[in-house]
Length: 81
Image (cartoon, rainbow, N blue to C red; front, side):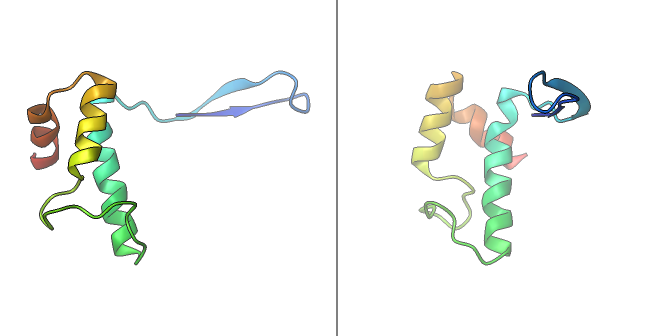
């Protein structure tokens, strides 16, 4: 994610130094953290997890595996550690 700026009213956009680099393998952790933040703020998560100790639903884990060529064990390892 990167912040872009334009000196000419939106014709030419330039990347700024402000941004965040995030490896694909960290997406499960980011998603789980966002779920926890929403819960702490009293907002409902998009889908409820089957087990309250789990951070992502089975469907979310399956989508991450498929989209980013990860194994379920990799995702679970990232989330537990």
